[in-house]
Amino acid sequence: MSLVLKVIGGDLEALARDTLGEFCRRSRQGEIVPLKIGLKRGHLVSDPAIVRHVLLENISNYDKRTPAFDAVRVVLGNGMLTSGGAFWKRQRRISQPAFHGESVQRFGPIIERLAAECATDWEVAARAGTTVDASADMMKVTLRIVAATLFGDDLAGDAEEINRVFPEILACLSVRVSSPMRAPLWMPTANNRRLQPALAVLDAIVTRLIATKRRRLAGSAMHGASHRDLLTILMLARDEETGEVMSDSQLRDEVMTLLIAGHETTANALSWLWVLLDRHPDEQERLRAELLAATAGRAPGVADLPKLPRLKAVISETLRLYPPVWMFDRRALGPDDLAGTRVRKGDLVIFCPYAIHRLPQLWRDPEAFRPERFQAGHEEQRNKFAYLPFSAGPRTCIGNSFAMMESQIIVGTLLARFRGRLAEPSPVIPLPRVTLRTSRPVELRLELAPVTHDQPTRTA
Ligand code: HEM
Image 1 (spheres, rainbow, N blue to C red):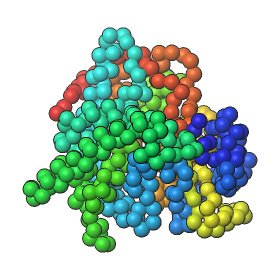
Image 2: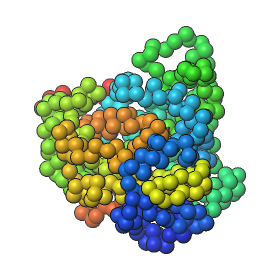
Image 3: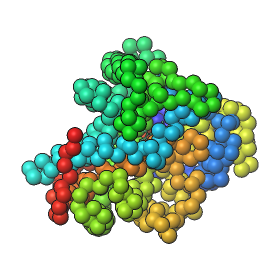
Image 4: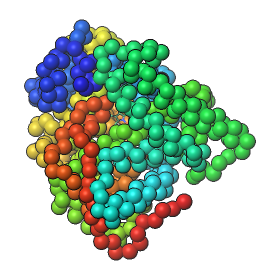
């Protein structure tokens, strides 16, 4: 059962039968709809003006002390995703410069290299006539990318260990988030017995990498700015207002947050993208033509991305139809008035991007896959509070530009070389877990696409 359902007792039964369908139906009933959540009152908000009010205009009246966020604190600690108030503001202010559009471009070469490695693996499968599990591969490549981005060369021998324990941690978090009774980590429940050792391994690696980095930075005056990994940037960052830097334990929480927030979301979006490209083979050909025109068949790099508007639009449309963060919530710190509905202290306000993105009053032909909605001149949606894959307002996803750049490079690299079709015709349906998963692995049968010249290569 999903994250919300366990969390929202009262209306649980109806929602349990068909979570996403029920959220969509209720969202169509009105701009703000009551949801009985066990002993708590909840409000499902679907109107962009009300979304804007809660996420921007009256943001100080809402925090993230909700059951869903409390469940992941055991792993993420008090990192940027889960913290609040002045502490969050400071962490965000310190971290923000590293995630600006231009700053994230420095990570382009890492993404290009790891996307090319994935393409090499796919080529082996294509030549052997075997299938690839695109969902597993997207998970693997995005985890590698975020880990390499964070730790740079220091990661070396730890990469495999991180890859080994991470799926275990994610699986345990999923169970934890969807269970109504959350035992503290020290209690020997079955889930905790799985989570504890995996988390201990990851914690030990992260703690050691932070210590290594501190020593290295103390020993050498500066790393060249362009070679800095994200951990170094965060370690050196000084709050402009207070002059403070992050402590080791704050760095630990931010690293855990970025490892988790920074890969499962992107991986699930890309899994859905392969499903959509199977349903729309003409779109695959169109993207390949765009790639050929822009790079003559070479894998795209950061510099090529402005020449690939259709690819970006396809990713944006995938995020509309299958937003990885399909729902999120806030807790009211005091009373509020949401379009005539009285919100009391402690009430939950719930946003379901999956449902909002399918509202006919906001989106023309909402169930249709139409990437042109996001292309210049066709921009159907101009209200950023109606399109929420990355949320909106001050707590919008800090990794937004990173995720878009990463997605374009990975998909562009693979599409430049392969046609991919689902190996099995049975439908793939969305499963609302912590993020929006596919109901089954996305197994693809690959065909090598003709390449004009300049095959992507493994670079050091
Ligand atoms: C397609 C990929 C992604 C999607 C759909 C996504 C979605 C989101 C959403 C909806 C939120 C807001 C959650 C809330 O306020 O309740 C969020 C926050 C966040 N995301 Fe992402 N994300 C993605 C990729 C990334 C990446 C690549 C990173 C980092 C490398 C990242 C780091 C974060 C962090 C740190 C926050 C907390 C920001 C804050 O509260 O100040 N995300 N993300």
